Image (cartoon, rainbow, N blue to C red):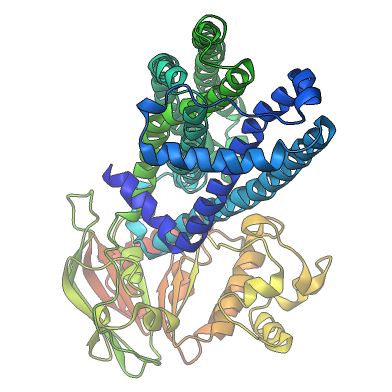
Length: 622
């Protein structure tokens, strides 16, 4: 229940709407009860018309069991009954019938108004709650470290924020109805039933729980199947996300049939679970209906005895009682399912709170320092790092210095720790030991927002949004004149090909920039970094996936971007880092060589020389 209490906290901001809902629910239930109660004088008027014509008045029969109920209830009932009788049953049959008809219309009109207001406020609460939960999940995800996204399936995360939150909303709404609307409805009809016949009511409440018990048993099976369905939908979402994003790889390896078969297996599992749940639901309907009929027949039989044999109840009152008591059965059925709805909410809420309960490891300290520029140098002092699920140190006691305006390059074999170094600078990860200093300040003491504003990042896998070219270049910035966007594009060698697009800078470039080539995407990414104008630039193998022609254009754009900036470069092609002020050669998380391009080439036995010779010979053979 701890999970469910956490879910209910999301309703608290809407307490005013909750109060309004309760008020309108009570009024709706009251009008519903009145519409049923009005059947008694209607039946009296219709079936006792001969007496009416001779007497011009009709009197309601008194309750058969006044001795069973408190005196205050009897007095209140008699007072209301006398007032009602004095108004309705005065006059001719025609006048009585007209009054009753008008009352029925008014009661149904008010019932419709209150029903609408009740439904509106319930919808406002449930949609507001689901919005707040989704917003909180989305905000929290942006605060989580990169490690989290490496360990989680994207499709499953999407499923939690969509399907599971939807289930929380629907289940919580049903629980609210079960705990608020249905009890009020039952109370209204119970009072009406008591006012008609206490004996018959006491007999009914002994019989009615039989139907509720049967419903409860069936519903427990439905709850289990609902939980399984949520998990299977998460699997389907994951496969969809992976295959759509990776469609090029699927086609390249001829794995369409494999992926189709995998998807079919998941949808088949989902189908079987849905059918099983549907089978239980379809069995529950006739079963509960039969139970209700049996209960109803028993009540009819006993009530008939009170009318025909005992003569303690009039036929019109008995019919009114039947209408009333059968109005109690639907809310009782709803309340019988309340535990199932709670369990569904808990199951879905558990999956959502698993995300919300993850404490961000990368966050601001209590009173972080603000910075607005990079002035002197960035230092790594005895920095070590390893991932949570790894036993091996990715970086081992690493120290280096980059002064303002310098170009620093990192080379080494795959897994040497190059990308980890540049990921530590904007605090995508934090070192397990040592410190990174920006102008003498530990970056953990700097506001994360301020730290990252100082940096521009261009990676091998450029990510662009399904937006216009202009919005992608100006991403993260507001109120940027079009002239500045175009100027950045020109420096990045992107302006000419952008003008050739169907709508120029207003062209939608597709998901992940799918309508552009690799080189074009990189140049837009560089234009984006140029417009941000950061003092520190990070290039993570920005040209390694490009053809020679694109590489020349991108490399030229990079050189423009590096001017008067401190630059960190991870380079697959060593020709791109010849002008670096300092090159760090990494091997198994340690710096094994440091120097300029020519200096490192002169170390014949060094790793850098070997990498260069290997790359040069490959280019020659190519």
